[in-house]
Image 1 (cartoon, rainbow, N blue to C red):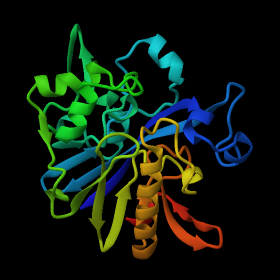
Image 2: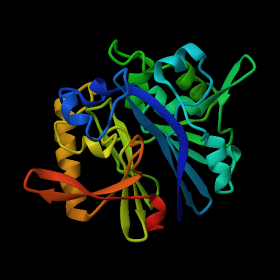
Image 3: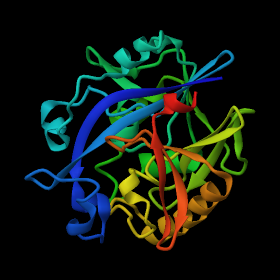
Image 4: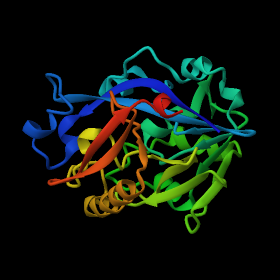
Amino acid sequence: MKLYSIDTGFFKLDGGAMFGVVPKSIWQRSNPADENNLCTWATRLLLIEDGKQLILVDTGLGNKQDEKFFGHYHRFGDATLEHSLAKHGFQKDDITDVILTHLHFDHVGGAIIRDGDQLIPSFKNATYWSNEAHWKWAIEPNPREKASFLSENILPIKQNGQLSYIDTNIRCALNKNITIRYVYGHTEAMMLPQICYKEKTILYMADLLPSVGHIPIPYVMSYDIRPLITMSERQMFWKEALDHNYILFLEHDPINECCTLIQTEKGIRLGEVFKLSDIL
């Protein structure tokens, strides 16, 4: 097995929304905001090469939306999915599987491209993995999440026959090295891939842990639909990660790719930070 961090650039979101009830005077120490109260966030993906499978976890924002849409999110940076794949010797047609942790636009936008007047899957040879509960949740969105579930990001996957569901009743999903965990606080049935790599456990955090600045349990995003459930899930996963020395892969932290956790007098806090390449 080989692992690769895939950089697809940055975007901005309101700092207050990203930290919920936590005051700006506290969260800006780790995630400084600009003059419009916007903080910078990464769209960092994970690529897993395992035998004949080349598995991409999430797809970033993509580029098919118009300038008005991206004007709300201030996408920037030179990195693209295509260029980052090419740096490691791959192209989009090599991808065999795409795990979509959930179907919010910043995680699934790159799953679909615009080809003339058609919307088609970006990875023509890949199976796209979601789960039935979350898929139904996304195509029949509640008013709170409706702006995050865009039909053009989602429906063409199924229309092109490339959608498969992972069974939420079992943890082992794609192969012997990748286990899928489920959380329900951020959105319905978000999937966290857990990778067994050289006797290490790497947990892809998606939106359960957006950045190292979110490690304290109450630092929950306003985007979460069930914040008290998120807190309970974080307590469980933080303890498990601490007890078993998990490496946490961070999708949105603008600086840090991976981290570990330690126990302190104030509770579980940040341990070490490092690049994925440091453990390979």
